[in-house]
Image (tube, rainbow, N blue to C red):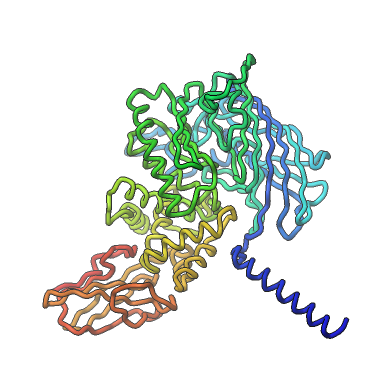
Amino acid sequence: MSFKKLSIAFLMLFLSLSVFAQHSQNKQVSNPGYWQQHVNYKMDVDIDVKKYQYNGTQELTYTNNSPGELHQVFYHLYFNAFQPGSEMDIRLQNMKDPDRRMVNNIGTEDAPKYQSRIALLKPNEIGYVKVLSLTQDGVEVAFKVEGTILQVFLNKPILSEESTVFKMKFEGQIPVQIRRSGRNNMEGVAWTMTQWYPKMAEYDYQGWQAHAYIGREFQGVFGDFDVTLHIDKKYVVAASGYIQNPQEVGHGYEDVSKPMIKNKAKKLTWHFKAPNVHDFSWAADPDYIHDKIAVDTARTLHFFYKKSLGKEYRKNWKEFQPKAVEIMQYFNKHIGEYPYKQYSIIQGGDGGMEYAMLTMITGKRSYGSLAGITSHEMAHMWFQHILATNESTVPWMDEGFTSYISDKCMDAIFNKNSKEIFKGSYNSYYYLVDSGKQEPLTTHGDRYKSNMAYGIASYSMGALFLNQLEYIIGKENLEKSLKKYFDDFKFTHPTPNDFKRVAERVSGIQLEWYLNEWTQTTHTIDYAVTSVLDKKITLKRYGAMPMPIDITIQYTDGTSEDYYIPLRMMRGQKQTKATKLKNWAWAVPSYTFTVSKTVKSVEIDPTNRMADIDKNNNVFSF
């Protein structure tokens, strides 16, 4: 090859690599899990409504997009948790503060003693999923079941960028309602079918996420679901995905301008397709009312609730539907556009829980309660089902971010204009610190020693992570960061570092210290005004966690002035109208500065956004 040709070749290679690099940056390849597996499910399930049992077939096309080959795969069999002696049962028996929905109190109110409800289940009340047969590309494969995990030993490895087809026959029994899933819940909903099928476990940059089901949250692989259900024709079915045969099933799905397809069989066939989701759930009851309301020209909300709720509760369900539209519109505006054509709010379950394209909530609620729980569960669609963080290992990224945006939403759509939206979260955090039971947010969701520590860490501390970040980088930068995070990482299972890097790029401020201190340690924030001598002010950091400092000073002449002290590790500063002082290095425990007039009072963090554990020493006044 001539030198000229060689030079051209190198130039073309350089340009190609440059284009690839730019494309990679646009796709956020800084995310260590930028590759992800893919699944296509096709399931056909026959339901026996009298026995609360079902039989199904599953064809699963699994694509290995990881850089290595796979020699085994894992499935979740969640219903197996609802059996005496299961890990979930034993965990309940050994927790000092178990989920009250899952236990009976056989002690007294002052001296409770808890008994696991799972331990009391009879053979016809337990839950199970049994795999009857399994093949890989037409050849039987060996497998074993341990509790809620099915381990499959492949006949041939799944090579990188190759696909394989698993075909399975399975049967299941839906348990008495104890947690999330179940039959005949407290409000009489017949079937709450969540986490009900053999579900492929996630495999990502950290390896297999084949966690036993102890009682926390879920994770899944993105893909397309094609699900056919055969159930007694009296039942109305609400499900993830879009109904494919509306004129056959009716029950509010049909186009009234078209003729119905008559069916004399005892069972109706319900065919749903759910694109690009990591879960498929459904509920069924013969008493469901099915309402619909448009969000805009592209999206519709569906509501399913029982006629037997009673007049007052049915009225609440009707009246809050326009408010549910406002909730979705708020999230579309402040996070990003909802990518599906529908979302369903379904009476079922045991409280409120998010699933793909729907939520299950209990129905006996006031108007305000319906709006509040819908706001929280719907927000999960953005953080848990579109962004899809790993809620087993970083529950605060879902529960906390969801709590933050849903609390902001409720404040906005009800025109509260509260200055203390997150007061409850701050108080819960202070309670946790005082209890001595705090654990780092990096603790696996199932590994927290108490439900109290898990709940406050995941919900309250997760929400405060964002509210304090607004304090650090500014409101406008936080709003931009949330939108860019969603836009860059939707459908990719992002990590804490991914969000941190987005916020750094938006704000120009370094934030590794903040992610580390707030999520990977139990360090606390405690700043104090230790002395004011005429015009000389001294501050001290008592807590191990450093922060930038906002200060308001009142002068004896009746005027006031705001000051801002950046943290040196930030290598930048937020936009503020306050007077900027020199930065404060974290290794230096005290900080002194001088003002031009005689001081009357000094207040650290006047907006109360720092989770400072001792507010008493934040103010100094004469």
